[in-house]
Picture 1 (cartoon, rainbow, N blue to C red):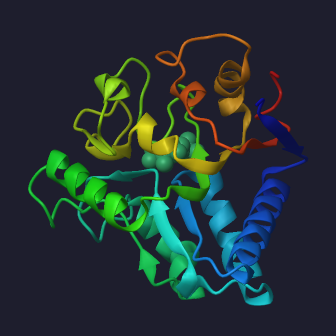
Picture 2: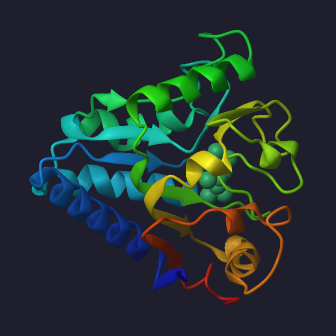
Length: 239
Ligand SMILES: O=C1O[C@H](COP(=O)(O)O)[C@@H](O)[C@H](O)[C@H]1O
């Protein structure tokens, strides 16, 4: 199944469209009686989408107390650090919309090591999100990384694990926890989000007919029913 690409005029338009579509999917899943499971990402365009979720949620039918919220990766820093992906998402929208089922890898002041954090997050996923994600949003780095799976890094090879500790990320902060490719593969819909010229080359490599996952880890994640790339004109400029 090939990936779908949706190109918007600007990053603002992209953020509004992605937030609106996410709310629509979540409302549909809830009206069918489900508690949707959504994976969020950190990063610049993610923050813009999160702000749009805060703005649009009150006019939607989504009950955020009945959404199970997760993160594709997390930074292993103190719980109150603004570098935490969960902290960014809480500040931008999760607290405002009243989300209560929010899961992220334990912080550096909650467990001793990044591996311990990864093990705890993996257990949490196994216990509360074994069915996988309904929608998994992922960013892509200028180097092609996805979640905290970086080009050429040993974490790309993790097997039989849901989450992996990354103690030496090339992008700060250096200690992170990432879902593995195996866990990222358990998603009905995978939505990549990217904006800006700085992402254009990585996006082109990720969507090229051939290329290696080691060089461009984002190539290694597809949804079971849908893989959709939300782009603005700048990030799509090399397609
Ligand atoms: O460090 C991270 O980077 C990526 C992309 O972030 P961006 O600011 O370049 O858009 C993000 O997907 C990931 O969750 C985050 O931890």
